[in-house]
Image (cartoon, rainbow, N blue to C red; front, side, top):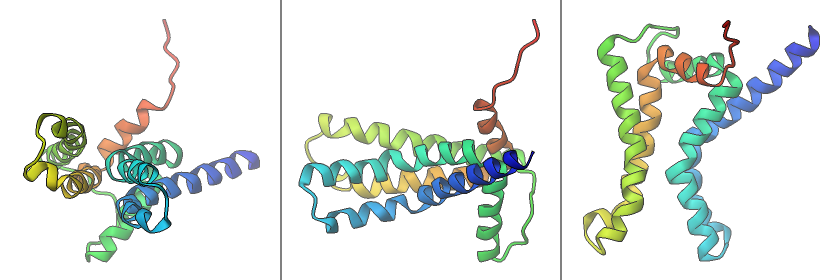
Amino acid sequence: MEKENNVKGWKYKFGMFFLILMIISPGVALLIPMLGFSDTITLSLQGFFFIGGPEVFMIVGIALAGKEALTTIKNGAKKIIGMPPGEYAAGEQQYRLGLTFIFIGMVIPFVMSYLPVLINNGFFVEQDLWINLSGDILFVLGVFIAGEQFTSKLKSLFTWDRWEV
C-alpha cells in the first residue's frame, strides 16, 4: 500500500510538471531563438511549443496527475484573481463556453498550418505567431472555464474499465 502512495505521488508531481509546462510553453517558445540553434531546429521547437505543445502537455498532465492537480492549479489561479478556492460545478453556459474555447483553440493551429499554402501574404500569414498564441491561450482558458466536468470526462478517456458481457 505504501508503494502505491509513492507511485501516486510521483505521477502527481510528473503530471503537475506537464500542466505547468502547458501554461508556460508559449513563453518558452519566445526564448528558443536565444539558444543559438539552427533556423530549422529553432522554428521546429517554436512550432511545437506554440502550436501543439500546450494541448499535448495538458492531456498528459491530466492523465498522470488527475483532477487533484488541476484543482490545485485552479485554486491558485482563483486566489490570484481574488476568488475563493474550491470546486464549483460549471453551469451549462459556462461549460459550453469552455468547450467553445477549447474547440477554437484546437482549430486555429490546424487552419493556420494550411493557410500559408493557400495565401502567400496578408494579415493571417504575417500575424500567424500571435494568432496561434491566442489559440493556445483560448485552449488553456477553455479547460479552466469548462470546470471539473470536462476534466473528469477527459480523464475517463485514459481510464480502462472492464466491461461485463
